[in-house]
Image 1 (tube, rainbow over the protein chains, first blue to last red):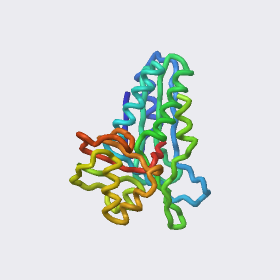
Image 2: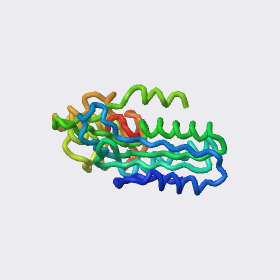
Image 3: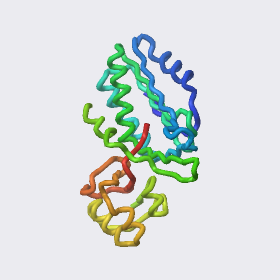
Length: 148
Length: 81
């Protein structure tokens, strides 16, 4: 299991290859990547991601450990960036490896649902117009936890 | 005790962290002390439904005890992913 909270970009291909190589025989590897989108077509200049050093790693480790236990994963990976990112940049990725795809998919969704609402990251949108807004948490994100 | 603020809570209060001497028994008691300090604290803690608290880096409730706690953090609901 690896948790990385970093400012630097990551190589999706290299990370996926290394993860898959480490779980030979697992049968199913799922990866998910989150990208900064410009919901407002040109209105977003950048996304600033703040986090709580120490608690972030602690929360992500607890979430990943739970996923590994619950779906008997061969391995799990979480990479999450912080700092200033522009539209199109990758924010984060998760990877899960299991014997069967259903477990790998479900575990990846679980990781995503939990790290959205339980890992201490906060996003601020820097608008091309010069303003900025903290992204508000969505009720749907909190509701998503109930299915687990 | 160290108190940390993140995101708009940090911006509203105007600092990322501070050390306070307090005899507050619970998080709610601590918030009452902070609110009474200055308007910027009162503004930041006006609506507790918009806030979350962590004690020594674990999420907690506002009625939780501060006994033995070294680090308290206040922040809005998280928006990772």
